[in-house]
Image 1 (cartoon, helix red, strand yellow):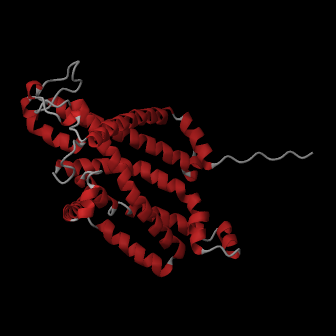
Image 2 (cartoon, one colour):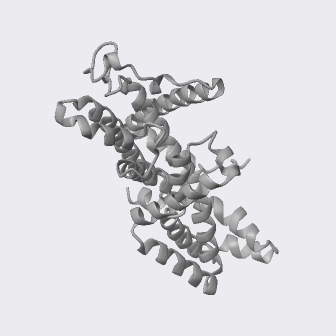
Image 3 (cartoon, rainbow, N blue to C red):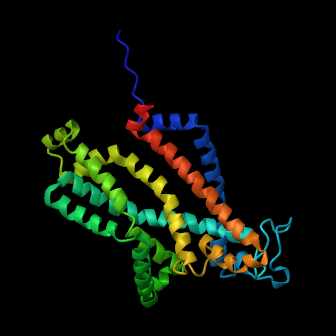
Length: 314
């Protein structure tokens, strides 16, 4: 009796096995899990105050304990208004995750769809989309983001429908996410376009065409699962860039005004650094540093695990 061959391992199973062997990747994953827990806690505090229509603890000023250094009661000290810096940094974590996730919800559909259309159809479609992302990519990111953010903020302030939306999401956060979303799709679009060019003439695609499968069916049911790892790698590597961009925008006064993002905390803290109040700046900077470091290192490990070329080279 012939032996039934074992089912081959999927790309995801191979990648997870390789990640588990990487101690640094597992350490970074643990750090990210801690940040995720802080994010969930901060979301709970934020939404509880919204539902109860009350002022959250991190926004309540205590002027009798302002500018206090780190202590047992306040691990990261207090700021000029007596607000606990640890609570503010936790809310900054919430803002960082929201920025990364909400912006990615805009970037991924735009970049994937345009890249798929350009790579699959080629010719005029490819020419138009290539010209489009070349123009967008040639404009400095920060300048374009600031311009779009101001436009979106103006639309939000004038629209009654958008005003209703601001009950659930800060208008500054919405403006920044939309601005970064409509400028950050270029890199993913280029990657997906290249992958679709490689896949469109492969045997499984030709077989699908022979069977009468529609172009959309081939693009999104047959080719898309084979390039999905590119989206995940791009997401993990771009997430830190989105957080840094938000910090820069908030530092410049363009970002989120009503919530304590890391950029806003750093912008406030720099004004009192000359007084020796180092703890305000240190808390937000350290939180940002360790998150971005963990994301970058884990993103590199994830790329090595998911990319067949890099995996075969090892």
